[in-house]
Image (cartoon, rainbow, N blue to C red; front, top):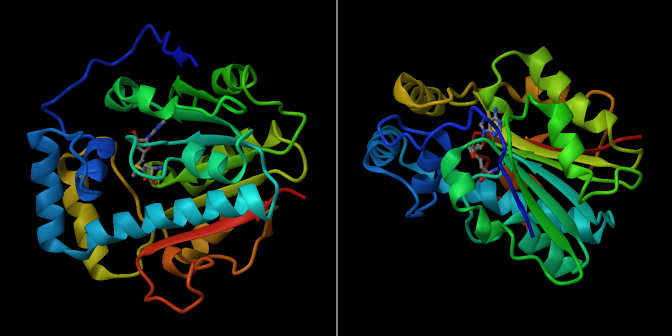
Length: 266
Ligand SMILES: C[S@@+](CC[C@H](N)C(=O)[O-])C[C@H]1O[C@@H](n2cnc3c(N)ncnc32)[C@H](O)[C@@H]1O
């Protein structure tokens, strides 16, 4: 168990500017947020009451995707970039429930996530967890640090949930994904979701978010999200609303404006 934070430019906790991880925590009903985050979160909920439910449904997809990777795909190592604040059903809890020897490395650049990271370091004795405080663009150092816990000679599940919307340019988002996947062997997977521009209400909620929140968030169309999986083999059912990705009870829940997919590196 180890915390990594040696950035000389480590940002201080700023409680005056709303932060994405803390707004998301508020939408999920968590307590790890400040008045400024709740203010933006409540404005967003007022303009789009379903958004809190969307946050919950997106986390539910994360749980199903990680569980599928650990059980059906046999993945035993995970790199979770854009972890967010600890909540119920963290990646390591889900993966290690299915496979107690699973090894998980978390990455986020929010100082409050770092402050709460100990809750992510509760590994089973057979497995391992680690937390890296870093920006996703800093791939070289993330991969170097992660290699202390993960064996990049074996398949890895790259988890990027709700983070690539913080990268406006598609080519840049794709190169971040590819930069991580290049370090991983064939049989590795990418699992991601992000907000989609599929309704005027969500577009308005994100406009409010972006007035003050840091970093800003950019919605993509389902086709643009699908293009981020170019070169990967999409797992059934492909690129869909998070509610439609292998729902637990097998029925067809309503679609929401968050799209996702899981793809396998050939
Ligand atoms: C919307 S939250 C999603 C959290 C979690 N993955 C989930 O699905 O519930 C996005 C997370 O990405 C993190 N993030 C945003 N930009 C980042 C960057 N450049 N490098 C690392 N983490 C980043 C934020 O701090 C935040 O915790």
